[in-house]
Image (cartoon, rainbow, N blue to C red; front, side, top):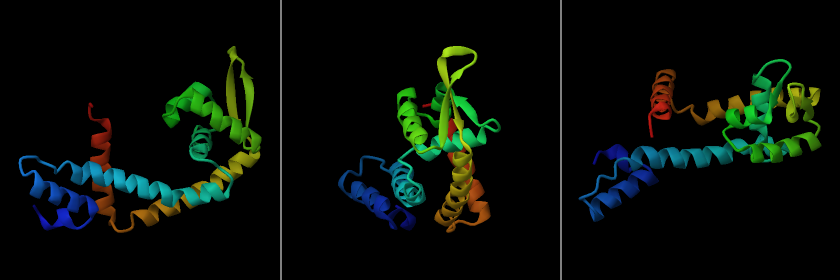
Length: 166
């Protein structure tokens, strides 16, 4: 086992499995375990500004999806669900909170009176733009241990994994 594999908790776990079950190849944990560990750690590190703004978990994802959709910053619940990768039920709960905060409005869809369109309000647009600057700054801070070339390589490798067949 190389020295790099034992420098963190996940590497130490892999080393322990190598000792206890040398018949198993625990090396996938060096990638998958580290990705999970980082995702959890980064999620906690990134939540602060959203909570300070009165947003619950996932609320900013809805605001950001609406903002990046371009004017008029409007999507259906189904479109939001596909963009944010959660169920329409979860979108409904998030939109309820965001509407109560004055950050989005709901309207009847012109093309189907059963459907609803969710639109950013002016306050929602301002909040999203402010938080996006903070969010990107925090993300830069989290990956500053990597130089530009390393970030590009890691981004490409993660994209390859994200688009691979399960």
